[in-house]
Image 1 (cartoon, rainbow, N blue to C red):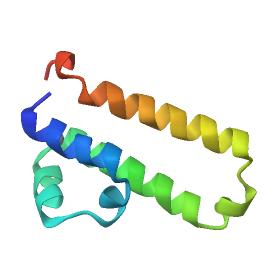
Image 2 (image 1 turned 90 degrees about the horizontal axis):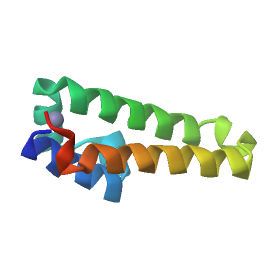
Image 3 (image 1 turned 120 degrees about the vertical axis):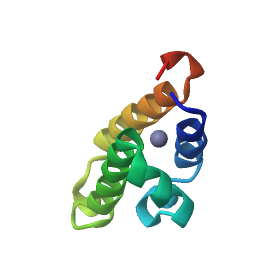
Image 4 (image 1 turned 180 degrees about the vertical axis):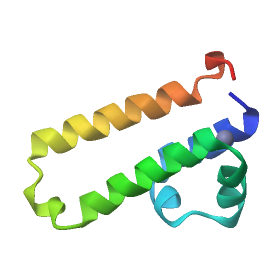
Length: 84
Ligand SMILES: [Zn+2]
């Protein structure tokens, strides 16, 4: 994984609204990096669903499982050993 990807994905893990709202710097990078673009879009869509009518209906257990899975995936992407 490129150093720039790690930088953006690191910020993504710490501050999810960044993915939903984006920043000019992130958008510029995501425009050139398909991997970060996919992750950003996925997170943004998840947040959108979470905030929509779905919000009230998601059982706490499902929410916890979803957040755990996303955090695990985010951690995986941030590992320097993944190559790329
Ligand atoms: Zn990237």
